[in-house]
Length: 243
Ligand SMILES: [Zn+2]
Image 1 (spheres, helix red, strand yellow):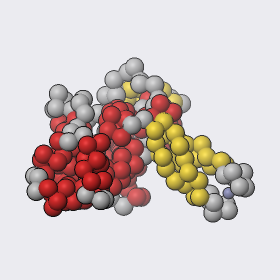
Image 2 (cartoon, helix red, strand yellow):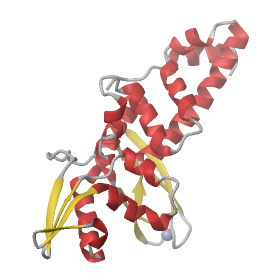
Image 3 (tube, helix red, strand yellow):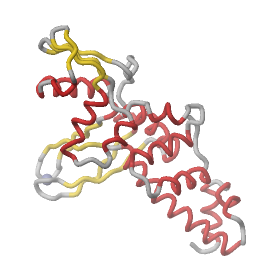
Image 4 (cartoon, protein in one colour):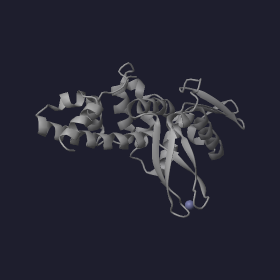
């Protein structure tokens, strides 16, 4: 993986603008990881994908993350400050393609979900997403040594497999422990690097295009040469034109 230049990041932003988050993540990684063929990127587990996105976010905007949350009890607005290191989990040593668990006479061979699975459920009603993920990710199911259809798996056993999936791919589900300083209410909030990073890229792109507009209008320079300047140099010129 490599750092994206300002021009490349703008191109990625433009390509991903109208796409759903799972595809925005792939557009970003396809540009930043030319060494990994796109079909392989789509088959990374969600945790592996998110680990790469965290690194790319760190290289692009730094290691500190700021986010907002609202207390569900008293409505207080919280400003959250944490670092990439705080939410980075250990990388699983096993490959994400095949795991197996044994639960109460059942043996299940499964893989953990990847971007292709998320794309497959993107347009489904929420009631169908879980069964579709299980259909796709459970590779073989045995009951007391006999092969069974995935649909035969009792719900408690399927729940146990889903718990194992999360355990084998911890980076895919990041929970922040929050506590309201006003009323003491404690809760957990999911942190999603894809939507977080994309919101930042969107705000950065709008700001950058405005800077290009101001400098191009004042100096007559082209977009490419303005984007090639360091942000510091661009800011100095913007100050000189009174912005
Ligand atoms: Zn509160």
